Image 1 (spheres, rainbow, N blue to C red):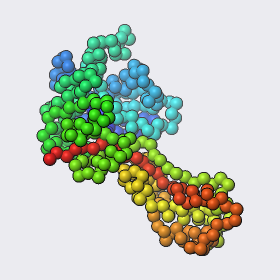
Image 2 (image 1 turned 120 degrees about the horizontal axis):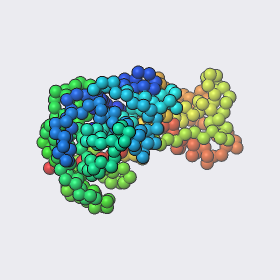
Image 3 (image 1 turned 45 degrees about the horizontal axis):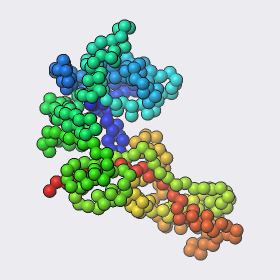
Image 4 (image 1 turned 60 degrees about the vertical axis):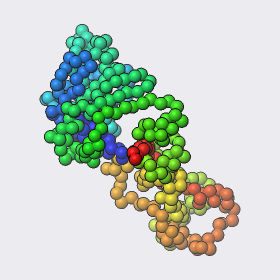
Length: 378
């Protein structure tokens, strides 16, 4: 099933079924969808050569707002309006007077086939009848506008997908649109793939053995650091990464610390405090690339802002970046009034806490990448 937008490995939004997404104002988004995109034939064979249009998008959001039991992620969703056959507008709920910033990420949802699921309605003539047999069929044999369709499905065992020859994914008249950035996102399909088999293996040991024996081609590893490191160091595997949503960071604790929390003007620069100069010096002594290599096997993305890198519009471009630089570290210690290397600790300082601060305090944000590994064929 396709969505209006997709996100790349770095969580950058890319238009997909949507050809244009435009903010009319803070609380109104207009979406124009692509034309010439054919739905797969439904399992009942009722709708052949049926084409996607804006009614499918409108229906999907209507179901989310009026029918779904899982409305919470879409609590921001207000009314929707069809403008024409390829255009609709989404209105943010009036509760969010200034708009809803993460709206775009919620456009990455599977679009439902209105023509199949909306065959009958309730007495109001508007609300889709979810007790129509099509809903149960779709729950176990879904279909969409994407590259694949279900060939066979065995619950808790495997799903076999077959390539749709008439999918728009293979239609260069559509995918040649430069804004789709198609080849970079999906490749040129020159590998000759006809079928994709997805197995469900609950035992991790059985899964990894099947992968290492070459019986499965792709495996996702996020928690097993040692396995991930082993695969990274081997020439037999290729790695695919994408940024996670969570990040890790260590910050300064200024409580009861007469060095880091010293508000006296720095002797070498009265525009900053002695404590700030020392904190800057510490930041410049941290080799972030080395930390990434040691603790995360190079998988982490080093960020200089407290927010996700995909929100780059909100990231101040000229923010100070504390890259590893011992010369700058020494300069700031001298600005703070300390003679380097003859730096002495003032009497009464808690030696243990100071040692901990100097050895692990880092103003750094690691966004951990989720890794998938593919075994190379001989």
